[in-house]
View (cartoon, rainbow, N blue to C red):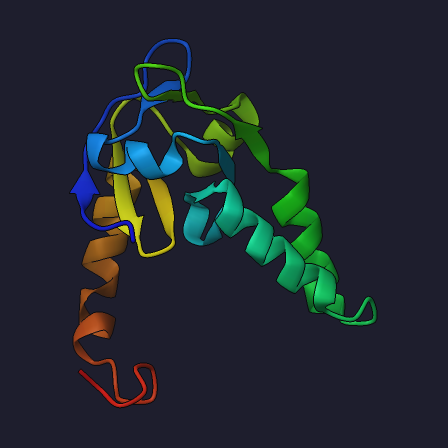
Length: 143
């Protein structure tokens, strides 16, 4: 499970050093793709394969599943982190997420998310009230 918030920087070659606490689980390879709210999702290979299987199981007649799958797979980039735990974020994904130099990398349970630092700060400020008001329907059984 990926947890926590980290604030690495993107180097001049578009590489990110993965947080040390995530490296072991991601060492075998990652898939980076577009996420919602203009962040990037980083999946370990096995988790990406699990999600891919769920999308394959959706009927081809489901328009939303087709649309989501197109963007999800077309924007996906796979690679194995180097010995320093670095991965290259392709230009098209950096542009989508508005990534500059300062990043925020968060653990989001089964995935890692990469955010532009300013975008993350804005997202947190705008969603704090929603978070505080979440009702039991979102979390079955409550906390």
